[in-house]
Length: 106
Image (tube, rainbow, N blue to C red):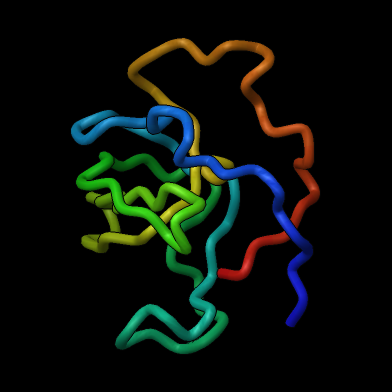
């Protein structure tokens, strides 16, 4: 499945979110087959769900992956910055993702 080429190397900048930070999902996230114990296509996170960043990792030495603990769902799901917004700090108006219709592989 072709997802398009992302030129930006996100890890050249500091992470947008830090462990312990409260965040909200700005997109629905479905299981793409990488989340064990759930059916492919099953909703893992719904838009508007709130959770806490638990840890930060990287993927392909290019992107930050935020392990977010969703307390109400009792799950931890890996999320990209474009799928989250901070509830602990004010976002810069220019930091919002411009491609709101961009799909995800989740």
